[in-house]
Image 1 (cartoon, helix red, strand yellow):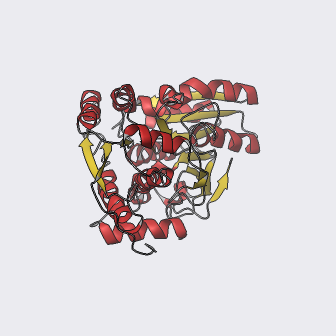
Image 2 (tube, rainbow, N blue to C red; image 1 turned 90 degrees about the horizontal axis):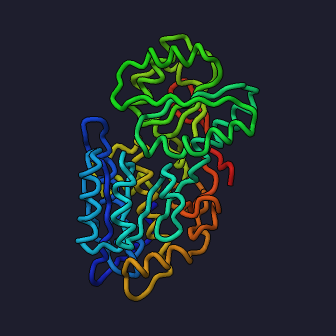
Image 3 (tube, one colour; image 1 turned 135 degrees about the vertical axis):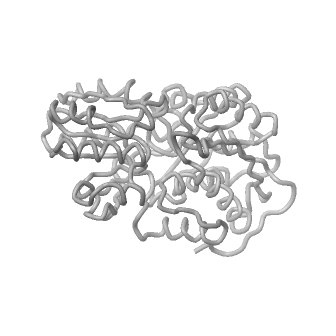
Length: 370
């Protein structure tokens, strides 16, 4: 699965990785584990970047905006050629210092309007609108629902695009839209879910697995019977353990990666995790998303030769040819404002969709909206 050996050599190229790591509200430490494993794979089998080995510079933001900004400034001081920003709560705090310094920023996803609008040096490997706007809206159209309520983790990175774009999109479709933002770490969401059940319509959940566990169990507790959809980050082994199968069955899932099924993308990711990691939990969507971001950055600069600087990396990403995004289940990507013209930073159009079975496992994924 790893392919032939093609080792990088010479002076290392520094690439940054900022993640919240493990904080009081979330555990994203898998992003660091996968980042290191992916770099080892790329250095041994994909000739690194411009033939030179990648050196990963990491910083743990701990869901703290001030610490996140400190991480970004540290990356600038470390002379990195580009920075991968994981699923941090305060993405804009990481992005602003890097953007001001001209350092290319790669994200596996973002809903922050300022980042999506940047045509200078920001690149995101997921369609910003598909998973959180287009996907639940299309489901509502097909079912004839008159209302969709989005249950969203109350952090700017999750709420930004919904607040900016969802109301107009739903109004155009003649479907009522409501957003219920719930603070991270809320264990009992029964009161909020009672409000949603009383209001009628379908539910869409946007958050990490611990957030989704509380939301799904809250919907179950109040006897919610309408359709439920969610983002891929919702469903991990922890969700499958904490939420009964009859609640999970039939949930429609939008995903950036084909996690939980046997396919070429997951085989490669699992092989990298096994060969270069130690006990990596490959069930977490943040893990394969990090693989996609780091390996995608390397694929985007495949034509780069000569000096590796923020300027040359940025130019190479913008001029890349369309190619398959590693780990994405067959999605194509091309940066430089070509994928989603309304969001110049986006490099992918559309995404993956699946339906869960009674064990909370995805059935089959299909590329949609491309």
